[in-house]
Length: 182
Image (cartoon, rainbow, N blue to C red; front, side, top):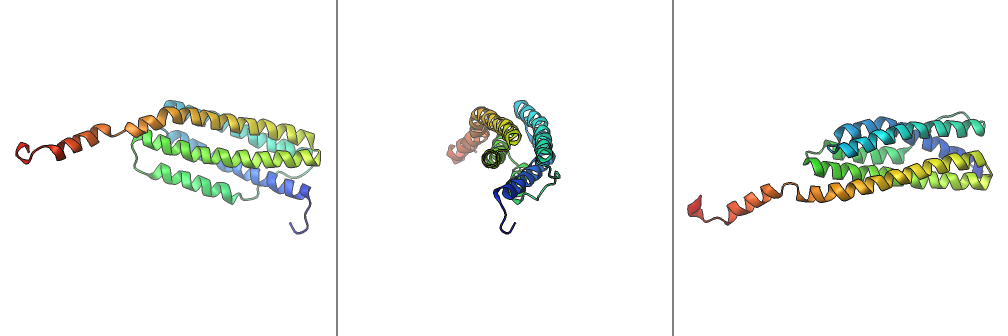
Protein backbone atom coordinates (compact mmCIF):
# COMPACT_ATOMS: atom_id res chain seq x y z
CA UNK A 1 0.00 0.00 0.00
CA UNK A 2 2.59 2.53 -1.13
CA UNK A 3 1.37 6.11 -0.64
CA UNK A 4 -2.02 4.77 0.39
CA UNK A 5 -4.74 6.83 2.01
CA UNK A 6 -6.64 6.35 5.25
CA UNK A 7 -9.39 4.75 3.18
CA UNK A 8 -6.88 2.27 1.77
CA UNK A 9 -5.71 1.50 5.30
CA UNK A 10 -9.32 1.07 6.41
CA UNK A 11 -10.03 -1.41 3.60
CA UNK A 12 -6.86 -3.29 4.54
CA UNK A 13 -8.04 -3.41 8.17
CA UNK A 14 -11.42 -4.78 7.07
CA UNK A 15 -9.69 -7.55 5.11
CA UNK A 16 -7.62 -8.36 8.19
CA UNK A 17 -10.75 -8.46 10.38
CA UNK A 18 -12.44 -10.69 7.82
CA UNK A 19 -9.53 -13.13 8.03
CA UNK A 20 -9.57 -13.01 11.84
CA UNK A 21 -13.25 -13.86 12.04
CA UNK A 22 -12.95 -16.71 9.53
CA UNK A 23 -10.06 -18.15 11.55
CA UNK A 24 -12.18 -17.97 14.69
CA UNK A 25 -15.12 -19.72 13.03
CA UNK A 26 -12.72 -22.68 12.68
CA UNK A 27 -11.03 -22.36 16.09
CA UNK A 28 -14.02 -21.81 18.40
CA UNK A 29 -15.55 -25.30 17.95
CA UNK A 30 -12.19 -26.83 18.92
CA UNK A 31 -12.05 -24.67 22.04
CA UNK A 32 -15.63 -25.55 22.91
CA UNK A 33 -15.01 -29.28 22.60
CA UNK A 34 -11.79 -29.07 24.64
CA UNK A 35 -13.43 -27.18 27.50
CA UNK A 36 -14.41 -29.19 30.57
CA UNK A 37 -16.79 -26.64 32.05
CA UNK A 38 -20.26 -26.68 30.56
CA UNK A 39 -20.49 -22.93 31.06
CA UNK A 40 -17.24 -22.40 29.18
CA UNK A 41 -18.40 -24.67 26.35
CA UNK A 42 -21.66 -22.71 26.14
CA UNK A 43 -19.75 -19.41 26.07
CA UNK A 44 -17.68 -20.61 23.10
CA UNK A 45 -20.74 -21.93 21.28
CA UNK A 46 -22.54 -18.61 21.76
CA UNK A 47 -19.48 -16.69 20.64
CA UNK A 48 -19.26 -18.87 17.53
CA UNK A 49 -22.75 -17.72 16.56
CA UNK A 50 -21.76 -14.11 17.26
CA UNK A 51 -18.62 -14.56 15.17
CA UNK A 52 -20.69 -15.70 12.22
CA UNK A 53 -22.66 -12.49 12.68
CA UNK A 54 -19.40 -10.53 12.73
CA UNK A 55 -18.52 -12.01 9.34
CA UNK A 56 -21.92 -10.95 8.00
CA UNK A 57 -21.45 -7.42 9.37
CA UNK A 58 -18.07 -7.14 7.70
CA UNK A 59 -19.66 -8.25 4.43
CA UNK A 60 -22.25 -5.47 4.87
CA UNK A 61 -19.44 -2.96 5.32
CA UNK A 62 -17.62 -4.22 2.23
CA UNK A 63 -20.88 -3.83 0.28
CA UNK A 64 -21.46 -0.33 1.68
CA UNK A 65 -18.04 0.87 0.53
CA UNK A 66 -18.28 -1.04 -2.78
CA UNK A 67 -15.28 -3.31 -2.14
CA UNK A 68 -15.21 -7.08 -2.67
CA UNK A 69 -15.25 -9.00 0.62
CA UNK A 70 -11.83 -10.64 0.65
CA UNK A 71 -9.63 -11.67 3.52
CA UNK A 72 -6.02 -10.66 3.93
CA UNK A 73 -4.15 -13.28 5.95
CA UNK A 74 -4.11 -12.09 9.56
CA UNK A 75 -0.80 -13.38 10.86
CA UNK A 76 -1.40 -11.92 14.32
CA UNK A 77 -4.54 -13.96 14.87
CA UNK A 78 -2.83 -17.05 13.46
CA UNK A 79 -0.16 -16.69 16.14
CA UNK A 80 -2.67 -16.21 18.93
CA UNK A 81 -4.68 -19.22 17.78
CA UNK A 82 -1.48 -21.31 17.54
CA UNK A 83 -0.67 -20.40 21.15
CA UNK A 84 -4.16 -21.50 22.11
CA UNK A 85 -3.66 -24.82 20.32
CA UNK A 86 -0.63 -25.43 22.53
CA UNK A 87 -2.86 -25.19 25.59
CA UNK A 88 -5.33 -27.64 24.06
CA UNK A 89 -2.55 -30.14 23.41
CA UNK A 90 -1.12 -30.08 26.93
CA UNK A 91 -1.92 -32.82 29.42
CA UNK A 92 -3.50 -30.68 32.14
CA UNK A 93 -5.99 -31.24 34.94
CA UNK A 94 -9.54 -30.32 33.78
CA UNK A 95 -9.89 -26.98 35.60
CA UNK A 96 -6.31 -26.07 34.82
CA UNK A 97 -6.93 -26.74 31.13
CA UNK A 98 -10.04 -24.55 31.27
CA UNK A 99 -8.01 -21.80 32.93
CA UNK A 100 -5.50 -22.02 30.09
CA UNK A 101 -8.25 -22.01 27.46
CA UNK A 102 -9.79 -18.92 29.04
CA UNK A 103 -6.43 -17.15 28.96
CA UNK A 104 -6.00 -18.02 25.29
CA UNK A 105 -9.53 -16.88 24.49
CA UNK A 106 -9.01 -13.58 26.29
CA UNK A 107 -5.88 -12.91 24.25
CA UNK A 108 -8.06 -13.41 21.16
CA UNK A 109 -10.70 -11.02 22.52
CA UNK A 110 -8.17 -8.33 23.42
CA UNK A 111 -6.67 -8.51 19.94
CA UNK A 112 -10.13 -8.21 18.41
CA UNK A 113 -11.08 -5.32 20.68
CA UNK A 114 -7.97 -3.43 19.58
CA UNK A 115 -8.56 -4.19 15.89
CA UNK A 116 -12.26 -3.31 15.91
CA UNK A 117 -11.66 -0.16 17.94
CA UNK A 118 -9.07 1.03 15.44
CA UNK A 119 -11.25 0.23 12.42
CA UNK A 120 -14.24 1.95 14.03
CA UNK A 121 -12.22 5.12 14.63
CA UNK A 122 -10.96 5.12 11.07
CA UNK A 123 -14.52 4.70 9.78
CA UNK A 124 -15.54 7.69 11.94
CA UNK A 125 -12.78 9.83 10.46
CA UNK A 126 -13.77 8.75 6.96
CA UNK A 127 -17.45 9.51 7.63
CA UNK A 128 -18.63 5.98 6.84
CA UNK A 129 -21.55 5.99 9.28
CA UNK A 130 -22.88 2.52 8.43
CA UNK A 131 -19.43 1.03 9.06
CA UNK A 132 -19.10 2.91 12.35
CA UNK A 133 -22.40 1.50 13.59
CA UNK A 134 -21.66 -2.07 12.51
CA UNK A 135 -18.11 -2.02 13.88
CA UNK A 136 -19.38 -0.59 17.17
CA UNK A 137 -21.90 -3.43 17.51
CA UNK A 138 -19.15 -6.00 17.04
CA UNK A 139 -16.78 -4.14 19.35
CA UNK A 140 -19.39 -4.19 22.13
CA UNK A 141 -19.98 -7.92 21.63
CA UNK A 142 -16.23 -8.56 21.87
CA UNK A 143 -16.10 -6.59 25.12
CA UNK A 144 -19.06 -8.55 26.49
CA UNK A 145 -17.39 -11.84 25.57
CA UNK A 146 -14.20 -10.73 27.34
CA UNK A 147 -16.25 -9.81 30.44
CA UNK A 148 -17.97 -13.21 30.37
CA UNK A 149 -14.60 -14.96 30.12
CA UNK A 150 -13.37 -12.93 33.09
CA UNK A 151 -16.42 -14.01 35.07
CA UNK A 152 -15.79 -17.66 34.18
CA UNK A 153 -12.10 -17.27 35.10
CA UNK A 154 -13.12 -16.01 38.54
CA UNK A 155 -14.85 -19.36 39.10
CA UNK A 156 -12.49 -21.70 37.26
CA UNK A 157 -9.06 -20.30 38.21
CA UNK A 158 -9.50 -20.88 41.97
CA UNK A 159 -10.67 -24.42 41.23
CA UNK A 160 -7.57 -24.93 39.07
CA UNK A 161 -5.41 -23.65 41.92
CA UNK A 162 -6.74 -26.38 44.20
CA UNK A 163 -6.76 -29.10 41.58
CA UNK A 164 -4.45 -31.86 42.66
CA UNK A 165 -4.37 -30.69 46.32
CA UNK A 166 -5.28 -34.20 47.48
CA UNK A 167 -2.36 -35.68 45.53
CA UNK A 168 0.05 -33.07 46.91
CA UNK A 169 -1.13 -33.67 50.46
CA UNK A 170 -0.69 -37.42 50.07
CA UNK A 171 2.82 -36.89 48.65
CA UNK A 172 3.72 -34.57 51.53
CA UNK A 173 2.39 -37.03 54.11
CA UNK A 174 4.35 -39.83 52.53
CA UNK A 175 7.57 -37.78 52.65
CA UNK A 176 6.95 -36.74 56.26
CA UNK A 177 6.09 -40.17 57.59
CA UNK A 178 8.90 -42.04 59.43
CA UNK A 179 10.79 -44.68 57.49
CA UNK A 180 9.54 -47.37 59.86
CA UNK A 181 5.94 -46.62 58.93
CA UNK A 182 6.67 -47.42 55.31
